[in-house]
Length: 153
Image (cartoon, rainbow, N blue to C red):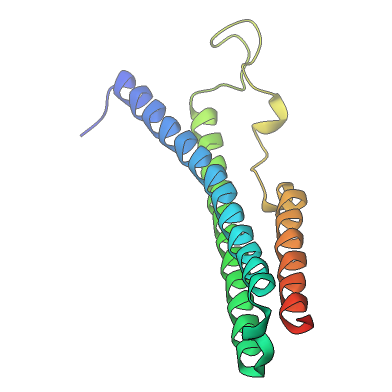
């Protein structure tokens, strides 16, 4: 069954909208995971400061340290997964833009709707690397501080 041109364009627009919505969803999810991870780590610090007598036992310190490590690893893993999905959806969006000829002049208006250099370049994870490393660094610093607080009490 062959699709009509209008059906093809409609399908591409629908796919493009879906890819854009997914891109936004993953970007927002990164912020949620970051807030939850930091919130849990700060909660460990608050708990250690409010009840230091519970941490006189070495086992409690080890359990707290393992808990902090697991929180940090899961937070970093989820942020990595979200960035990978973000990049995949950005590239799907670029494919739709190519098919809709948003990079060509004279199709929709006198100038191309999008920059010409985007036509041949896919989005790469390294373009997100600055933010990705920033969030990993924040999580690791807070996790290390949490472990320090647990053992310093």
